[in-house]
Length: 417
Ligand SMILES: Cc1cc2nc3c(=O)[nH]c(=O)nc-3n(C[C@H](O)[C@H](O)[C@H](O)COP(=O)(O)OP(=O)(O)OC[C@H]3O[C@@H](n4cnc5c(N)ncnc54)[C@H](O)[C@@H]3O)c2cc1C
Figure 1 (cartoon, rainbow, N blue to C red):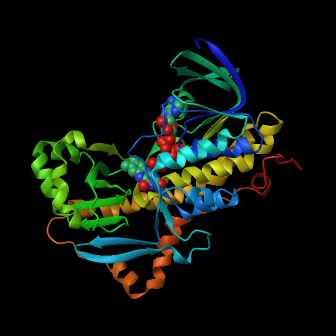
Figure 2 (cartoon, rainbow, N blue to C red; figure 1 turned 90 degrees about the vertical axis):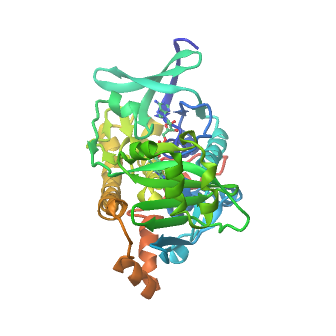
């Protein structure tokens, strides 16, 4: 395919949640769209697995919910947290004004494969795997396409719009000259698996104690675990050695303490560096960044996937008509940022506050951790548990698929009224 060329209305760099949802929605609207994913498949670990009620509501609006929920998943109706050995319910999703009053835990590759299957049903949708966006093509200062590397060689794609949905190390935003504002993060995450036993609970576990914080996600046949450490703390853990790491884990792992010795060396774990950043401008003529490419999210609250999905829905709602007619203007592209910037700012501010004021000080603490008064309030007044559930499950300014894009029934495409 050396030096080969394609032309499309919209090319999206990145087949993560933002890129795949945006591609699926634009394909439903009858727009010619190409999504590029640099990997050969979606089978990568170390990504969030939480599909929140707001995202499930989008699937409901698209008529895809039943099929989606037929895939293996776990439903989390309450969020629990163990603090200093005491158990608290910190979120109650059962009262949300959504069709699904739970978080669905599903490996992200199942979510992305599902979207790919749905989008591929449209002849105007193309998903190019093992295709890495590398350079923006510009004419008279405007973006008019991108260059990508495939296994066969270079591919030039000309497009009315390039969407950068290529995550927090985005090539597209760097190519556009966009420099994100960094908000720092005092934490990193060590990611690993622990075996499951039949007697284990089947819901996520979050355990917080002085100097230690462990989250365990039930994955059906194993536990996906996130051990939170202070930024740079992994070096210290490496220095201490694997026995000391096992001992640290055992002291916080509760029912799973009996199997921490399955982590036999540091090849069994991965370090995920956490960053929180945001672009000042998400768009320029011919180009728009969405999802983590526009605003890298911290894992706090597990809301990054859902913000990426919300960006994708807003992008399709705002731009589909312009894309059907041709090339959106930069004013139209800016409307996506105008719509999504406030929810992003508020969510990131909350994440930074929790990272800096709760997680980092707890990790620095020695001795005993006493549950904060807020936890006790949630215990005394269960109605208060609905507040964190709403913030995490729905968030600020949830997006709904526009009516025209909802009704596509496979025979007629939405009309521009
Ligand atoms: C440790 C950690 C844990 C997290 N846990 C959760 C969680 O539990 N729940 C949650 O909701 N969020 C979580 N997040 C945040 C979440 O992972 C992101 O916010 C979310 O994945 C963003 O989606 P996206 O589609 O914008 O980007 P990504 O998911 O990063 O997807 C980008 C895609 O683009 C591809 N790509 C990159 N460069 C190129 C290129 N040049 N050409 C073509 N393709 C390219 C990548 O392979 C990838 O598939 C976590 C984050 C971290 C750091």
